[in-house]
Amino acid sequence: MITVLCVGKLRERFFQDAQKEYLKRLSQLMPCTVTEVPDEPEPKQLSDTTISQTLEAESERLLKRIPDSAYVIALCIDAKQPASEELADKLNDLFVSGKSEVMFVIGGSLGLSQSVLQRAQERLSMSRMTFPHQLARVMLLEQLYRAAKINAGQRYHK
Image (cartoon, rainbow, N blue to C red; front, side, top):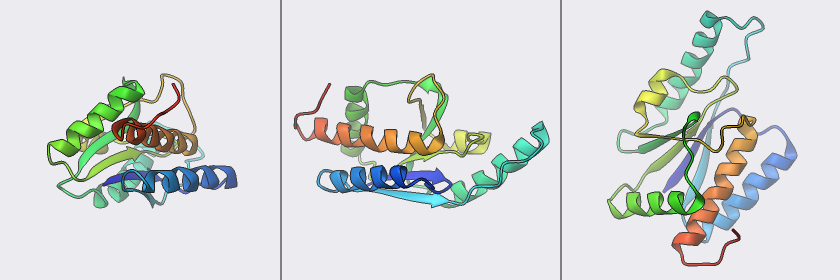
């Protein structure tokens, strides 16, 4: 089972529709769910203290949703950027080795706290470019779908 654990809701209809479409496609290949935790309002004055407080509040919500048995992959910009085939291989290896709960964690607009990053067994970057976390969620779902197709031996677009 794959869970995409996210801070915040998808507010725009087009992101909601894209998420729904990829979850529908994934349902034919591998179980996948999306779990949202509430985000904190972004502080009006960004200081180290307010950023830290925001990240800690969001991380408490995230960590409460992560079972001890879960294999956690945190999405962050300063991490390895696997090709689609490498992500497929990684998921296959995790499932074959008995990891039945794999969680991808996406932070809010300020990212993820150190406590969430420390809980993660791995970190993954979609790109060195910065994307809104709502778009990152859709991009991750698309890549999970692509990985599932690769692992099922089905055709996918390169």
